[in-house]
Image 1: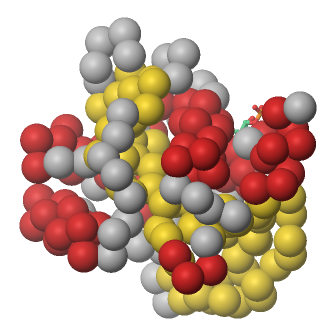
Image 2 (image 1 turned 180 degrees about the horizontal axis):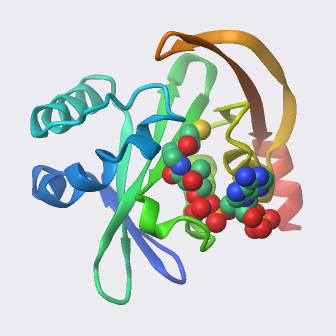
Image 3 (image 1 turned 90 degrees about the vertical axis):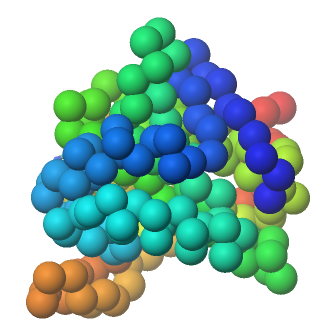
Length: 179
Ligand SMILES: CC(C)(COP(=O)(O)OP(=O)(O)OC[C@H]1O[C@@H](n2cnc3c(N)ncnc32)[C@H](O)[C@@H]1OP(=O)(O)O)[C@@H](O)C(=O)NCCC(=O)NCCS
């Protein structure tokens, strides 16, 4: 996927880099951020951030940092994990706790979905959230995704089985919503 910059009304998204690490680590290191995500370790150290950036490059994954346009504050991350042979990608995201509840994940999500369909040639973008994280389900519904179902006890998080709610949007649905 090509390097990029995505601007929305209030946000700027660009590929995460080493320069983001000092701002990223304290935000992503909050236990409340790790608690409802599959791949964010806790505690989260600078080395985890470096590993995260390295693995993104290896897997050709889009990993964006999210900043506020007005003062450049780093607030979170969003990414697309591609499955090129099937023209699909998984959307993942997190925001620092002080920035929850202001519509930022929805605003960023809409822009990344648009980027995925218009610039990456994707046909399907999907996401799964922990059943006990309804805010994430709201984000997915608000960005136009449809609920597909529940993968029961699909993962183990901190020694507990967790149900995963799956949502997706297809290119044809994205296109017809624009008409
Ligand atoms: C999930 C997360 C990204 C949401 O970000 P956000 O910027 O607060 O989301 P938004 O403000 O765009 O939308 C949140 C929606 O959830 C709703 N919501 C919040 N808490 C809720 C709850 N307990 N039950 C139901 N809805 C809830 C909000 O009211 C809002 O919906 P509305 O606009 O219809 O009122 C953020 O909480 C987060 O980073 N959590 C930790 C990491 C994580 O869980 N990532 C997602 C992995 S799938």
